[in-house]
Length: 522
Image (cartoon, rainbow, N blue to C red; front, side, top):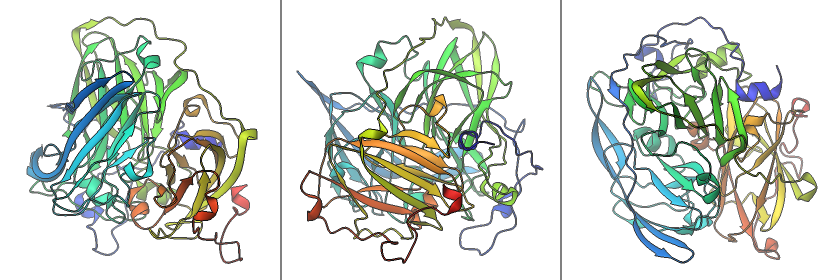
C-alpha cells in the first residue's frame, strides 16, 4: 500500500474481529493497565432518534466600514448541564451555553474582536485553529485566562473562505478541557466562494458536523477513560453534542462541514450504501475542483466539506469505516482504527429543493514552488517528543523570517499514530513518502496524518505578523500526545531580527539526539 493511500485510509483493509466494548474494557484514567482492547462495531446498533442539534450562529456587534466590518463577539466559558444520554444530565462545559459553543462567522477583510470571559473554575484559553493571525491573538499556552478574568484578542481576516474551529489550548490540560465540551466552528466567507452555486443556507442545506466520541457512566456523567497509547476513546459518538443524531434533509444536495473534534480517534467517513460524494474543501478552504470519493479519512483536528446528493424519502447512514493507519493489528485495535461506527442518519423529506449543476472549478490555487523555499527544516515525532524534546514554554525551538517560504519535512518515527498541526499558516503537501499528494490533499491544510516511518513534506509561506517574544505552536493534534509534550514553539520575526531571539540549539547539533530520519524516514 502506498503512503498516500495509507494517509487517506481509502482502502479499509483492516478486517478485524469485532466485539462489543464495555466501559470496564476501557478502564478509567489512573487505574493502571487496562484490559486489551479489541475492534468494535456499532453498525445497526445505533437507535437514531434525536434531531441533530445545530449550533446557533453567534450574533456579533457589527460596525460596517469601507474596507470591511468590525465584528465584536462576546464569548464566555461556563459550566453547565446538558441532556445528552438517557442515563441523566451530564455536567459539561460550554461557550455561551451548557455544551460546545456557537458558530462564529466572518468574511475576508473583516476585523474580528473577541471579548472572552473565563467563567470556569480553571484557567483556560481559546485557540482559533487554522486561523492566520498575530501570535498574541492565537489563544495558545501563552494566552492563558484565569478564572473570572477576560481576554480581548483582535485581528483582520486575511485568508480564503474555510471551515475553521476553536477550542481550548492550555498545555497539559487541552484534552480534558475539550473533552468537557468547549469547541465550536469558525466559518470564513469570501467573494470567490460566494460566487459558486453551492449549498450555503446555514443549518438547512449547509450543516455543521462536529464529530466527537465520549464515554458516559451509569448516571450520565462524562468518564475520562484510559489514555492507553493514543488518548481517550469514547463509546458514544456525538455529532454537535447529539447522541443518536438524525439530520432531516430538505434539499437534493446538502453540504456537510465535517470536523473531527475528537481527541484521539480517527474516522474514515463514508455512507453505508457506498454512494460517492463530492469533496469540495479541506482544512484551509476550497479545493481547485470537486473530488468524487467514497471515503475521506480525518484525524483529530482535520476538516472536510462534502456534498451529498439524496432522493426524496431516502435514508442513509453516515458511517466511519476501519482505517489503515500503517499500524500493527494490536496497535490498530488499541487506537480504534479498526472500529466501524454508525455516525448519523440522513433522512430526506418527501419533497426536496432541487440541486443545480456542480461547479467543475472551485478555486484558484497558487502552488508554492519548492525553488522559492529558503529553508528546509526537519521534525521527528516519537514518544511524545519532537526532535527528542518535550514542550517547554520557556524555549523557542525555531525562528522563521516573515516573507519567506519554507519546507518542513515531518516524519513519524514511531509505531503509534501521529499527525501534525502548525499554527498561523496553511500549508501545501509536496509529497507523502516518495509520492505526490492525491487530489483530495491538494488544497490548503493545517493538519495532516503522518504514516509511520514515512516522510511528509510540507511547504508554507510566512507572510506577516511578527514577534521576537510570543511564539506559535506546532504539535501532534492527538490531544493526549500534545499534553504529554509532543509540541514545539516557533516565532516569526521581521528580516534582520533573527539574532534577537535566543533560540535553543537543535538536539543533534552536538550529536546528542535525532535530527534527520533514520533509514525508514527516507
